[in-house]
Image 1 (spheres, one colour):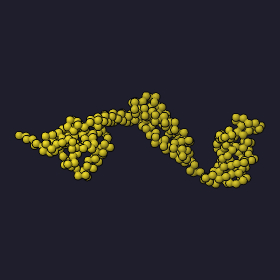
Image 2 (cartoon, one colour):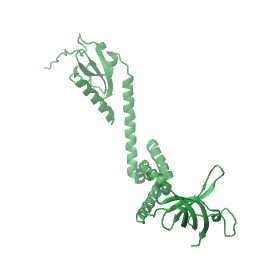
Image 3 (cartoon, one colour):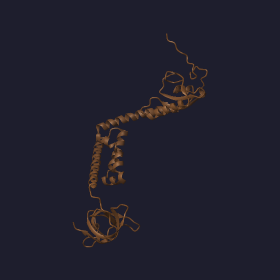
Image 4 (cartoon, one colour):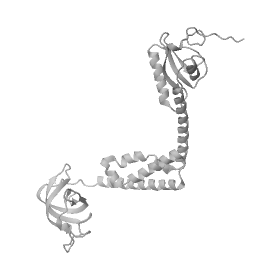
Length: 314
């Protein structure tokens, strides 16, 4: 013969001491959230905080709603200061007995649905990456960008020229995650982009390794009448308030570099004519004498008032 023990606690529906107006709601939670660990931690932290204040759990011993004993998925933590006890209350009791809004429960149900969709989408994308290793590699596009594009003052990005490929890879990855399977053409394009980035990164790494074995450049000499004999590294057009000027960077045979305005004699051809192709270009060997000022880098300086500037035949 089975006997049922009549509840005598203040939270029981039949108790003459039950008074919904004496309860304070401290939060509403989902007891089985899909991978929402933050909510679990928040719930545990709240319960521990209440216990530290002297509260203890009361009500039904079934582990469900502390008021009616029914199993619940969503529950509100309700506490009574007069008895220093707290209970979990399900939505039905909360709305019917405690007359609180359902908005918080609706938010929890919506979040649970969104989490299920997110988990299913992530699982599909993970399977897609397993089938397509280059797509999996492309998911690291942000990490790669941060290392080879923005590292070292952006110089890697300027040399390796990978930013467009990485941004395009990221766009394809994002669409594949949100909308499903990418087309065969998109997957083939991803593979081409991955190969380009890998090749450019390898080439730049090899260049750095070669530079590491080079003899360090000597400090740039400064003062008047310094002779510069070396190779033009770069030629640019520099805009200014008066229109602009042609400037160049020259690497001296000793390894140091200087930067300044291209001398007039290096902007004309052998007949003395100025044309679209008459100015010096990167790779040309030149010689001139100038005044050189130091920069904040010992191997780099600025030249001005160049004289006796000539091209040197290789």
